[in-house]
Length: 234
Length: 108
Image (cartoon, each protein chain N blue to C red):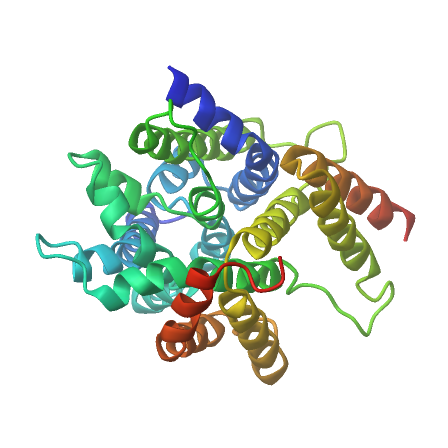
């Protein structure tokens, strides 16, 4: 139970943004005339916020299935990069939980899992699983509920989705202070900025992720060296 | 009404392709073999780079040339950074940043 409670505390800041984006995705589907079952199944099996929002316009316009498939892969391709550091960690959990955890990695759970530090009395494997499970269940809940109710909450919550951005910023700050080398973070910022200005806001993320990956392959000796010596500016 | 067969096929395909994007690294490197050292290296170095890119990704809708010039986002991100550096309390930083953002987008 200790690992469950620890996991719950870790994901709490993200539940606000999941609630809001899930509400938006469910409402869009409802407004386009799709029943609550579609919201439930897409939340359960697709489980990707921006994809489910794009999905509504693809469905409504009757896009050809090959186009649907290509769009889905392209929009979600950033997930490939998330798995790279988690193969050994999730494999250690084993059983059915291993594929489940691989398939429920999101922007949000990635940021929790790569910044979380478990105290010695918490089972890390169990807590990793609970983090993934809680986020997934909450997402299904918020998408399904909003498709069921089909109307906005009486309170205007717009802007609450910024809590996800804020969470990512805190992770960047923590990594900056905790990591012995600033090369990875600077590489990420630089490639994001370069491709943002070159390609524009809609398509920069994949080139930026790929460029960072290549750059870090070449810089790996230096990163490892700096990590051994400890934080350069701390 | 919508064609249920088409909808089911489309939702199924989207689920499948999304699952594939998540499964690829595990399919490539998740066998019984040891992970190549290069991958272990990257596993440690990639997260700070990915998180930096994710912050950009979240802010991609900002239009710096149009009023209010991305100032609500810039001010709120700055507040999160300052709060996190000074207090090291993730909840507090997120709370302050989000409240600041929600107020600013209503004011401007």
